[in-house]
Length: 529
Image 1 (cartoon, rainbow, N blue to C red):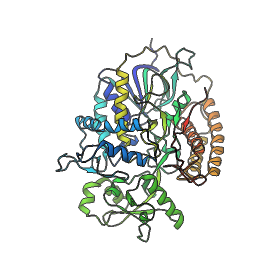
Image 2 (cartoon, helix red, strand yellow):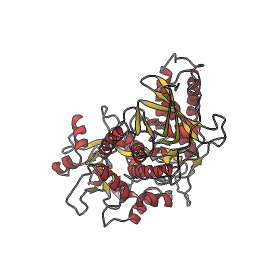
Image 3 (cartoon, helix red, strand yellow):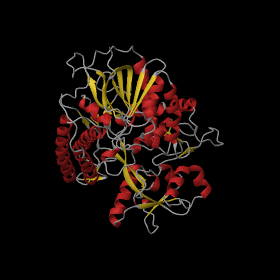
Image 4 (tube, rainbow, N blue to C red):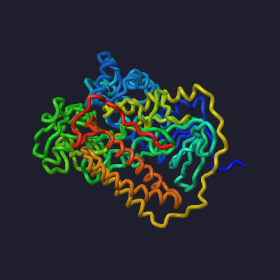
């Protein structure tokens, strides 16, 4: 008799954002797919993306121009082959979404779609759905995923760890699936799969202030590392310059597109400050704008700065930014008549699990896509609106690689063993360690870093790691414990990577090493075997 806690599929996809859903739809006509989501299908960073998707669509634009803008934003660290691969496949990615029915904002141009411009882009190339592109894309694809007979959606499930042949004492190491906690029934499933894909997003929740959803806890990066995969460039954490500053506005992003459409950053007295920091002013890349805001806040002792759109017609703002206007209005801020209070917040993890052009990791049968991966596209700083593009292009390349071969049969996998653990006696340990970790990372591993701060951070992380490990081996797993275990490991990888970079480049700015070295090199970490 088959155990109900043991499931088997051709492909297991961990994560339900754009990368995971796109991969599922591209595979499902030929493979049996399981798609697991920590919460509900729409609870992902993809759904929160406001600005849009960068791609070469206008005849006046070019692949070379998009590549050049990506290189400039990336601080000389973008991989040339990966960047060209993504940019050249941009049009096909957008065409696929259009075919799927994504309602991109239209206009009367020859293209038929409105393109906006964001920081770091030399011209307009960002296709969007008003100011809620991610939500529109997710809504469109989610409906199709849920209808497909070959896709089994498991909501409220969180992966605990990958299952590998080596862990089971089998020859020829490969990924065999994963142990997954069903958080509603409080039981652990053993899911076998010929191919497994990590599409778990980034690790923004490792910081106290972030634009990311609560699900962004570095799960894929941590699981891949524990399974023996390399990670790279974890020191490059992008802080979005403009997160809404309001006690009741948790993680609400104020889109880059506002600055692309003429938004001005001001001090409380109305003075502009970006012209003193960069000739591109408000349209400088995110790392420069975030550091400038951080500098001005510390210089003047401010809680926030202000993004001013009041010089634009009210009709224009309501047409292009209806969701931002509505959310701010709920909080008593009318963006047509008053500036928006903003602060920088952790936004995007530029590093991640090392992959090749087919999205393959170091472990056979394991793929990584989107923010959880390191493809080489983003370099030392991601160019605005390249993130959803990366999800689409690498979901397609992973699907092609998986479909190129027949599924490999999976051996019988052991069930999760809880015979030697007990229920946790004090859950407060988890919440306390979570709060301590996020405050530590914000204070010591933020926008501006020093050797001393990084040493202090690593010391505290090591202590937390020991406490969390002890908790993990002695008590039954829970959603919060799994996430905290992954977050503390991800934090350790970020700090270790930052300590190894003896320069300032892109998103990593060190007071001890303020210069940029003449040769750009990736920071690649390899787990001990």
